[in-house]
Amino acid sequence: MSAIPHQIIIPFDKATFGMGCFWANDALFGATPGVLRTRVGYSGGNTVKPTYKNIMDHTEVIEIHYDPNAISYEQLLELFWDNHEYGLTTKIKRQYASLIQYHNNEQKSIAEESLKKERIKHKEELRTEIKPAAIFYPAEDYHQKYRLQQHPELCKVLMLTPQLLQESHVAARLNGYIAGLGTEEMLNTDLASFGLPDNYVQYVKKFYMSNKSTGLFC
Ligand code: MHO
Image (cartoon, rainbow, N blue to C red):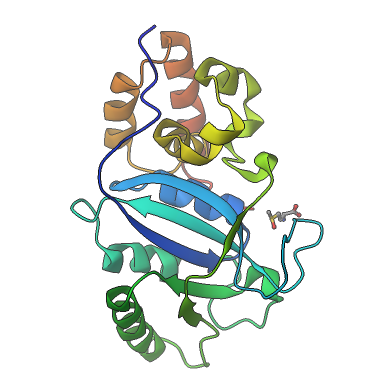
């Protein structure tokens, strides 16, 4: 078996979003072209060392590393607006708040502009907050690539370590595909280059096909 191409080492930008339970958007962005890696965690609060059981004033967020030559911040924001677990106008506890954390002034103005456009589509006030990026506390290992981790044999073949759960490109992609996300074309191209044994290629395809119509869930 050839080596699994876990790491893609090219310049990247970061995007951080809160959109509800982070399991769903980890899978969504993982299967998005131009996204290099994802990891989930807690951010935005003032307290230190939040955990899932004691998240305090923090929000569940996803941190996305993307190739700005392959996908724009505007395109990521489109996915952000369209895929909130609780919608954009529902009053929801801080854990699941709608949050954009910008990493530079350009992201800030693009996000503010897109919020203005999004407002026009809704009758009620949007609850989305736009704030500067703050300390990101990675979530516990079992939350990283949650959908993929429901397939322990596949994870074993990928030789996923706690570090790779947060950093692997292949894990990010498969976490989406196994949940039925991404296009079939992307799936086939990726599976041809990931170096998985053939029975696992078939295994991933089977779950992709059967989950394809399920959509995002948490
Ligand atoms: N509905 C999920 C939420 C998990 S999420 C990481 C559960 O009941 O466990 O917030």
